Image (cartoon, rainbow, N blue to C red; front, side):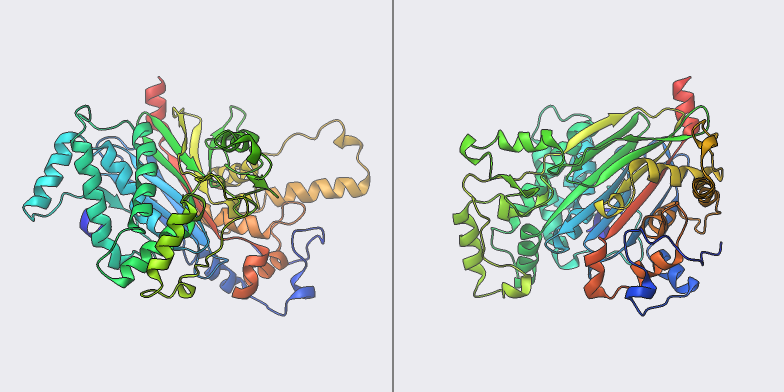
Length: 486
């Protein structure tokens, strides 16, 4: 579809109070520094953005991204593209569950839906004329792909047909005019793509491979966090437990974290109450149990996951119609129903959207899947990237209470300060984040043992100790923000 529509020494011992027991105790695996770096850097990406791009001055200087898998294949996916028929850039991270199929499909389709919704009626008319007369289609997006990125080539024609139906419907809207605003486009695109995923799993398709893919996409699921960055600011649309955090540099040079998304899980009480309000009072105590939707699903908003959206009758009808043509076991589909499944849908993908006007002190945006945030707080992630960016490690003055520390406590304080001043091993900010997420010791030091223990785990054990991790760091054009601010 994109082809058609777009164009320091870390050796030493570590504290035993960490997240994982020592490699020497548990695993008979050893990795050299070269092997560690090779594993951590194999999926990294760094792209500099021209000053004038995507319909005007770019609010983005560059971005850096990386992924580290725990599942095989990786259930995380990422996307980055410049809008060519409208303004701004789009960045997304997608965390799959129940398989990788849904995250894969959403990562290659959602940005098209968003960009298309923002296009003017005149531009959409040009697209339609090109399709009608079999002429080359003007590219909608300029993609930034990693060489290992994969596309569903066998489903490309289906995806283009569905996108075309979407833009045809937009053309029928009299008020479309200059296109949707980013906030409207984001919400519309999330909902429409999820509806198309559901529809594609129900209708006859041209071949069994395309049909099996559509079923896998619909019955697996994924969360999504997408940022549109334009000259006027940042819009973040989030559905699930991926996260967007802004890195802000204060006047004293320190770094602070400004969340631009909220996690949609059971720890978000407002989210739990939102779902409860959509169902009868008799279901209040069964909708979220053991911290999961119907006792099964951790995120409370997601693409796909028709197991939590369709009626029982529709699920049975679709699956039974497949039995002759598709091996359900090979698709990892099992005909079970969650307990207390009475008044579906229990799940939707309506994104929560936040807007932030870029200020001179706003330097970067971190987008990460929950595997990153399982290991780092917002503040830790922002400090790591900020100090990596500036090369300056700001140390707080010794407080009055710290001046009275005993010798052992003073030694601990010095270790923490020394750890923060250690030079970075990676030029890529996303790789720097992942290395610290997995290898940080009790005092903030990089611990070789811990890092090795996390990276040397066999495929069948890795997921028991960590999740897939995806991180994208978008560096903002502070000069542009400063000119707007003045």
